[in-house]
Length: 372
Ligand code: NAD
Ligand code: IPM
Ligand code: MN
Image (cartoon, rainbow, N blue to C red; front, side, top):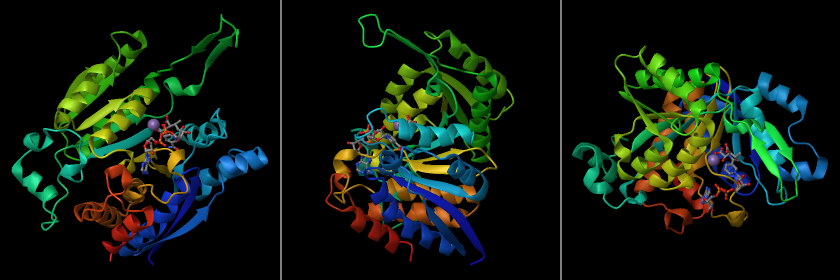
């Protein structure tokens, strides 16, 4: 091995441990293809640990994750036994905020034409070569896809800071006030990250979504988007109100390339995006601060009704591993892993969320076999 990565895993709750267990050998094998190994460190954080000890994210663990690892790999956090979700907020949102992982990078990519619920998708696909490359498993040459865009979700402010006041709780006069915070520094840096990524990846259109017609604070996003966009003359800038973009995602998803938006809208639009291309069982995400260790997690949650049944789709966790490899500088491992998932889908492997009968373990087995 020419390189050993130190990766902390937080399998977490519900289906988290199942998808992480399925993905780990796959990540190991993909890394080996690029002559790298992974030294895994399994952290027992999650609902069980919280209920047993009262601990969410101990300070020493936080410092260890901040100082000593190359990446953090998360399954999912959320458990019906913790109805206030405080452990998940302190672990997941805590790590995003305290490590200042300001880019939440969420690709939306159609890996097989059958996976989209959009009826006319076949007729709208972008160029016949791309259609053939995705639809015909025998070619296996290209991962060109008719729906292929990335959401840049601001990850450190917006509606997620839990700032506000509460009065008269439990009474008829109860009033809950939640502050939505947008600063030039934080909105500006995610907009810049979206443009930088677009330029580095040959994308020519960046779309910013807000609700500035109803929420005056969002005019800050308008100003910054115009100013920063002017610095990227080769990239077209367009604005959409978030309600309108939600409709357009469904009607013409193939026209989007890079979408940048605030924390809450990015959360919602990324589940909508996942729904366009097969659902949460296939949606990956990376929480990044360029130049620092990142936190990598599927977009999905702990899916309590599926937990313990061995039926969760492990592909989102696998694709999340590909994002991890990209970030740590193992591009061949990343490409091989993404290609292996695509190949398994081309083979017809479908877990229940995709309408099939494959188990977590059998789906993972096929992905692993494609990495040989
Ligand atoms: P969810 O993502 O857990 O589930 C939504 C739907 O998608 C369900 O129908 C579920 O069965 C399905 N699904 C999700 N992942 C799947 C997979 N890998 N394979 C097959 N089907 C899958 O969202 P939810 O039900 O709204 O939330 C459940 C819990 O997860 C809550 O506590 C929530 O706060 C938490 N959550 C955590 C994260 C995270 O840890 N990153 C993300 C979202 C939600
Ligand atoms: C996500 C999740 C989280 C979020 C929850 C669990 C707090 O939905 O990662 O998309 O809203 O960011
Ligand atoms: Mn979400």
